[in-house]
Image (tube, rainbow, N blue to C red; front, top):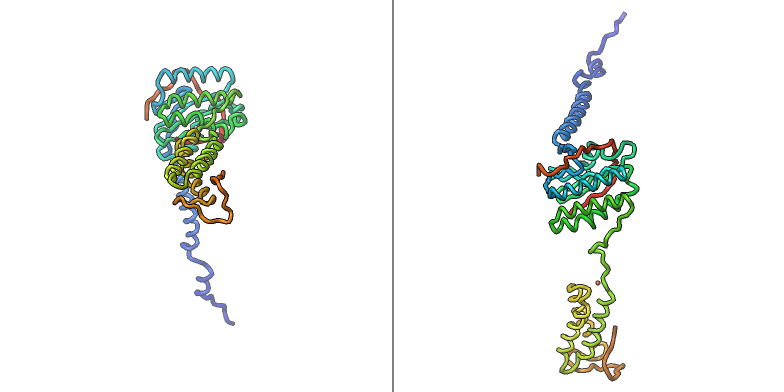
Length: 312
């Protein structure tokens, strides 16, 4: 009788070494450990949320004490009348953190607004990065929409900040937020969106071209050229000096074209043409800062990321 013999080579191929079996587990473990470490380190180096010491926490020292006190009193009156909690925070710098993430962290940590109603608003100013953020609680997203928040930043806050008047900008922004929630806010016209009287611009070109074109021939060719540009510039001045200069150049060019089409060359001689009518040619856009001393605290409100951001 022959006994079956085991093939050692075959056995070793069927059972992989222990180190090979454990390698995938170690890779998975180290990957999870790395992700947890990154998460913990990101929290460790995140900018701390300052304590809520009042309706206005001015760590960047942007507001004089009297303005801050007056504005805090208005916010307190607004809360007593409507129940909405509005707070202002200024910090010198975000130290590399995202504006939106820090604003949401502050709002949820402070718990602005009433629990269940979620009627809180945070106005965040960061002069170091020239950033502005209005964070809106769930309950006020219908009244203080993202679009309205953006308008308040652009129209009320940014113009004052650009001129260096932070107190006026914060004051105007807070008042606009309150008025928007109450339904009484009327947005001013944005200077960049003011309508340009384009009809004056085009009329200036036409008149300059007509007058210049009629005087472009003969000994008055230089006078016609200068007069067309000057006349267009003067008429177009209500549109702004930049557009007036453009109108002057276009008026002079149009005068040349009119003269050419009417058969008068810049040298003063009439060109031969099959349509040679007598007469003249015609034709036709940091630390410290102010904080209120009243016992102000959040009411348990929640935030979902609504609001708007801006810069100046």
